[in-house]
Image 1 (tube, one colour):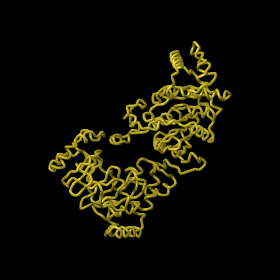
Image 2: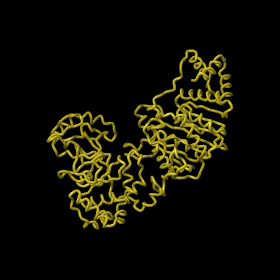
Image 3: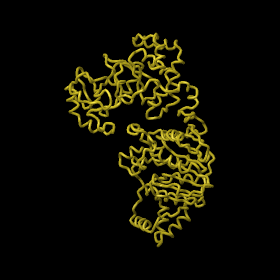
Image 4: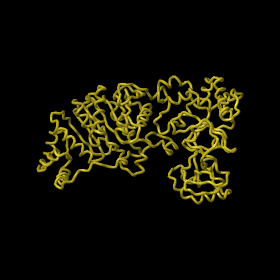
Length: 571
């Protein structure tokens, strides 16, 4: 605490009753019940006597704690005021050190009531100290009734605040930038009650879609409690959280509108690499389903809009409307590459007749179960027919018996030597499965010709994947693919997907800052049959000739009509 605040408390130290201390602090700052009881006051006095400092720092990782710098909090409240907000009540659901509360009191003289909540008690003390400092320096500043609540936001019933619905509300803050899975792995107490709140089914929850940002849960809680109040909500969250809120809005239909995403430079503001923005919406409004992107630093410039167009979620509403004639369902099923979660053993490099693993062990294996492996970085070219890595394929479908590997003694012995590494795999998809199981494998994996794309790269490039030495190439689980028995059908599909129309459509439904730019769900939205109808045969011929000349292929357009019928009928 500052010397001025320390002086105040040293003077109050002789007060016999904490009630008198609270009355004086309320008169000075507006804080209600600064000390919750006699015991808390006595403990505080003891700390003053011993010269003990109140600790305010905590583990940023456990709490996803990126305290908003005071200067940024000030800029945000000023932006809110420029949008016409005149709040009478302020709610800060994860108030931390109180920077938003201080900034809002300075910016909005109309505020009559403040509610701040935090799980970390020392932060609430820092907020109190900052408020005392504020009013010592500016005694004539508006003094709203300030209530600081200690507790877990997930256990707090916001409806108990009994807010005056005649007073415009401002919800403002910076919820934790961390996922429930990350907190769970650290046994953190800062977690909501475990539930599949997005109602994911089966394997979706198991393989990661059940994971969500804590800020997303908090935002939905706040909207549920307050969307019917007049006012505004403004929260600093990751971009993925804003998208997920828009996704949920179609189902939940909160009374919110005028949604805006003000993009910030999180490296500059928080010294952390994350794609984050200020999410703002008007409460008690006609339900809206799109959000406009803007720069926080140039808020007057309107950017593109994303959200729902009828029943489809898109990243660019204007561009999507131009290209949605190829929106539909792909007649071919996109598949993800294989997943083994044991790269130390399963990913190999070839040295002569031998293989070398990531443990720098040189081994000799039978070739029958060893296949070339492509990763995302290998797909950044038009045609791929060779590899730098190999993998052992232990199954032809998930759950299949792996005892057959015994007929390949060298491979069996190698896997047995590293059995414990397989047993240590944490993903529940391997639970109660045969030894050395893999995932993302099926008949489609063994198709000789493939069209594939990286889910991680931002490039809209689809690669044509050909066999190597007569064996199909495998892809890892960061890649998505379509498999073909015939090379010409693969090439026709490759031409379609690399067309300008397909690229523009994909750009209108995907988000470049997502962890995976491309997903199976997005790729399945490309109706290849509709795309084929709009591809001039002359353009098809030109692209095939380029491929033939560059890579020594001999594909023709003779089977194009048969291919189009195949897309339409599946036969």
